[in-house]
Length: 167
Ligand SMILES: [Zn+2]
Ligand SMILES: [Zn+2]
Image (tube, rainbow, N blue to C red; front, side, top):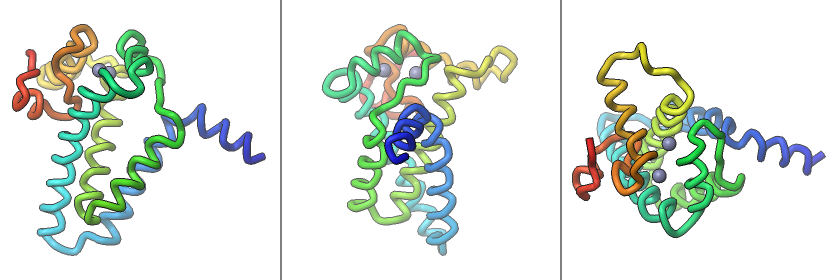
């Protein structure tokens, strides 16, 4: 029974994050957000996520860890390539231990933004969407062809800062 549950979770790991993390973000905001300052700290958590996204993508996925999995994503972008089941919960549990709640909540909002946008990028036909959305999408799709640029997925800020931005 337990093994079967684990197997189901593993095969649905891609979808699990789309349920767990938005719920977690909403729960944290509903339970803990009591002031404008809280929202400010949460916004800095979103920014922190975009920075982590940039560096994890650039250094870990393109070099140190899960490189073959990430290569697979580059060559087969529509496939549901996932990390091992333990990885994301362990990573976020670690962040929870070291981050104040509002920053952690913002960090999760950033992750949800990444999840949804990256899914749209590779699974939704954007040809009829506004041009600015298409331009936003092309920026990551260029990274799939040229893997030395455009490491950010949510925002291009860190690519500009660290000079890896390519139009
Ligand atoms: Zn991608
Ligand atoms: Zn990549």
